[in-house]
Figure 1: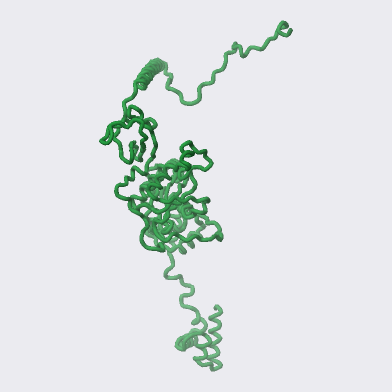
Figure 2: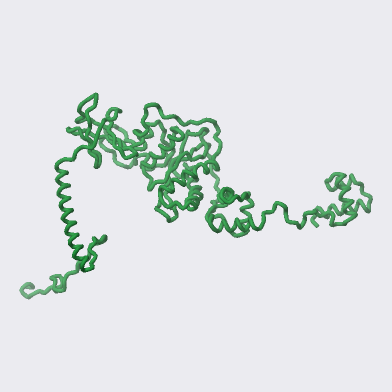
Length: 448
C-alpha cells in the first residue's frame, strides 16, 4: 500500500470504530460523501484490497506492443540507421505507417540502447535577435561544403538561402564548388518562384565583396571607388541591399540550417541512392517542401515583401558575367576564346573604337550590348595566322599518328604495348663507362 491508501485505511477504521461521520471522513480524504460511502462498502466486504486501484498490476490498454517495439528498433538499426529521433519519427510515419509520439520513440530507442547520432551542444546564454517582421525582407545566403553523398560521389557544395522572417528555404541547389555562377542560379530560382527580396545577408566572401587589402586598379583610382564584384553588381542592378556579416554567429540562422540539412538531407540522399550532382539536386528539390512544412514559423506581419521584376528588365542580362571591351577596327571584340563579329545596326553602321559590354550568360551564350541595346553578332572568321597554325599542327598530328600507328603495327606482331604511358618520364641512368662514373685523376703537372 502506498501512503495515500494507508491514510484512507486509517480514516475508514475510525469511521468503523470511533464513530467518525461520513462528512468528516470525506473532508479528511478529500473525497465526496458518495465516494466515501462506496469505499466504506468495499472496505467492509474486501478489506484493505478494496483500496487499491483495479488496474494495478495489469498492462495499460494503450501500451505499445512488443512487435511494434521490436520493429522500430530493427528499422532504427537497419535501413534508417543514422537518422536522429525526430527525423526518424517523421520517416516512420511517412514510409512505414508507424505513428508514434516523440517521447514514446525516445523511450523505445533509449531502452534498446540506440542513441541519437546527433548530440546537441550545451546551450549558452546569448542575446536573441528579433526576426524581420515580413517574408522577403531579408534572406541569409551561404554555401556548405560537405560529403553530402557519403562517398558515393564527389564532394559537393550546397548553395542556399533562408528567409529570416519565416525560416523557410525559398531555393537551394548543389554545385561542385561555391562560385558566382551558383549564386546567380540561386537568385534566378528565388526570383522565379518568389520575387526579388529587399536585402541579402552574406559573409565576406570575395564573391560578394572585393578584398579591401587588394590593390586598387588604375580605373578604380581614377573613379575614386572600388568596382563591385559580378554578384555585387547584379544585386545593385536588381535593387537588392547587400549586408555583410563579420562572424558566423551573426548569420546563425543559416548556419543552423546547414546542421539540420547535414543530418536530414544526407539521410534522404542515402535512402534515395543519389550518387551524382543531378540526382542530388532532384532529391533536394523534392525534400525542400517537406523541410519548410516542418520548420516554418509564422511571420510577425502578414503579406510578402518580395518585389516583382519590373517590365522590360531582362533577368538573363542581369544575372550574368559582364565585361567591358573596346571594339577593334574590324568591328570585332574578343572574350577568351570567343571572337565576335559585330553586325551593322539601324543606328550606326560601325562600332569601331567604341566601348561595349560583353555578357556571358548562364546558358553559355555570349551577347554584346551597347548603351543598353543588344548588338547583333556572330562568330568572326579566323585569321590566316590561326588557320596556318592549325594546319601545321594538324599535319604534325597526322604524322605523329602515322608513326604511332606503324609502331603499333610492328609491336602488335611482337605483342608489345606501345600505347602512350601517362605519368612521370622514365629515369635515364648513365652507362657504366659514362664520364660521370670515371674517377677524377689529378696529375702532377696539374698540381704544380
